[in-house]
Picture 1 (cartoon, rainbow, N blue to C red):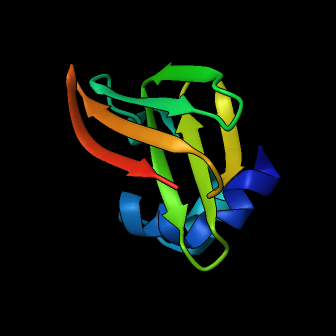
Picture 2: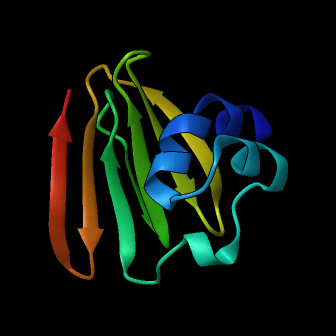
Length: 98
């Protein structure tokens, strides 16, 4: 998980309002995750994943999406044949298709 946190330190710092150094040194804490935020992914083979208490950060330069969940860990996907929905409660807030 450190490697994924390291790769996305700058967008994490921006989203969470903390410094890159703080993200690298202290990691993410329970306060960084919201109970009503969740992520739904559809991968290139049609597999799906839903994560509660999770959020995404996007690194357009590297063409990578980082998924950070409080209980299930961190994930990294390339922006290729990927669908991402960010939800707040039951409402889709943002949807991306690459």
